[in-house]
Length: 304
Length: 304
Image (cartoon, chains in turn red, brown):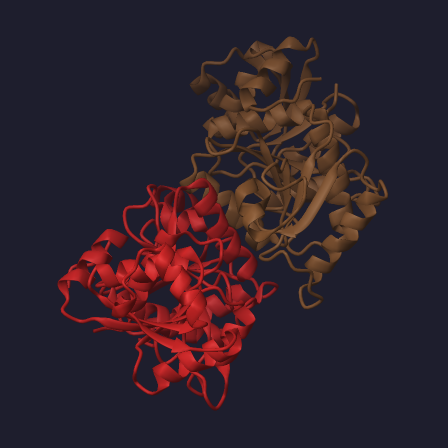
């Protein structure tokens, strides 16, 4: 499979595939979510199930000029019920992907994390993966975690690496380059993430994460700029060529996300990792384009 | 005073001033440091004192085509002695500013932090301030701390705010807008920096930091983009208009620094804050331009 290097290529790949993905959208009352879901349907790779108050859904669809007959509606009285019913659609095999509309993150995640009726298998870890496309980088750049795990333990990092590397494989990147991000290249017990990184690099050398190269600790510049790494004398195949950045913590991850969207014209898609099916966790401030590419990423991540 | 909005304006301001600043450069053996210092001399706002091995200094000056008679040389056998002698130049009133050349950061800082013969007054805090100029922002954007304090305490944050706001005043920004950066806008005791931020905002409302507006917790995008803040319902004069970003920790600060230089065409200058005189802490990978603007920032920060 040719590596997917842009969101446009991702969408083209989905268009070429004969598969359609059934997407359950929780409370699709806002223009951005409705628009992104309807676009996926028009592009031919999605069937839609809108879950929520049918009056508000009808209003959203009318304002989007959508044909209501093409969409299955599941009625729910409130946001909590909508989230629970959408999760149930997935569990019953009637939907493949879960998407967030105009619903609070807490209420949405509660349904996903429900131990009896939720979507996270026991022993799995909930984490977030973002994928960026920006003029200053010649391929997609994935990064984690900007939203869910504030200060990952080494166990959580292992799970992140397993999920995220699998996603990159599904994007056709047969041997992803993974940079473990720190503010310096030195391993120092005063900064436990740097010693965790050294452990993970050693584990990867023994094949723990399959086909992937791990490098680090290194900073964002060494990960994305070979010259900068050379000046510092850092030798790793990853330098200047990263496909995935694993950040020390949510402060660094979120800063990267907000900085590239604000100052580097980046478009960013995002999905949750860990649940049994792809789950979207977009925020109100995401553009329809960003929500649409998040859906495309979720579809690709189903791996079919 | 008209606010200085670009590095070019900063240099123009120094050119117009009749003051010259005596700069002691420790081990100016590398082209970048020598070039930056010599440019400040040619621009007319600096006199130079080169401290180190006179043979290596002569070689560096010859390769830079500099007139050795214009520069005072202080001989030192090794890097540690060079740092100590340069610090002594400052303490004896023969130099105004300390600049780092080709010397390890540890050795350089050791001389500065020496309790008896150093440059940090008792009770003061050593911290780092960066100032960025980038196409995506219509004024200079200062931020801290990317290099010295990994996880600031509230006491250290108070010192950072005092120093950094004073520096912005010297740049002609009479009422700096300060954004306290976090990954969310919520104050939550699980994240002590967010509760520290709330305390600092309250202290500032009582005038603790002089002429300045403090806002936060907020993310980088709210700090620099008014529309993004409005979508989230964040109301602060700082939103979209930040002059200074105070980061949660060094991971976030360093990520911001590396990301804007890598992906947003930023030029960044930097100085240490806390010492009795301006001190530069540049890194090997900084461009001569970045080192030159750091010198300009240090000169402006002398406040004369």
